Image 1 (spheres, rainbow, N blue to C red):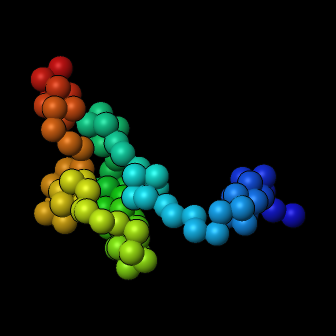
Image 2 (image 1 turned 90 degrees about the vertical axis):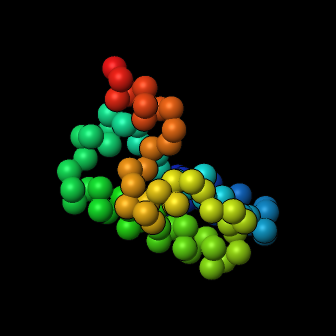
Length: 91
């Protein structure tokens, strides 16, 4: 017996043979506050999974441009973007 979400995905997939997934649909984003709650092992796991997910989508031809979060992770930077991080640091 398949879980309900698997059945729905299977039904959707059979209706639409060319089902594509974008990086944003599978990406996990943390706020600055949430990121601070992660320990080093969790941060490393997040980086590894996000980079592997992006790499897999690229190898399948699904990603056209590299998301900024991937640039940041590749450089070893924190994964949140722009003003959200600045606002969290000031509060």
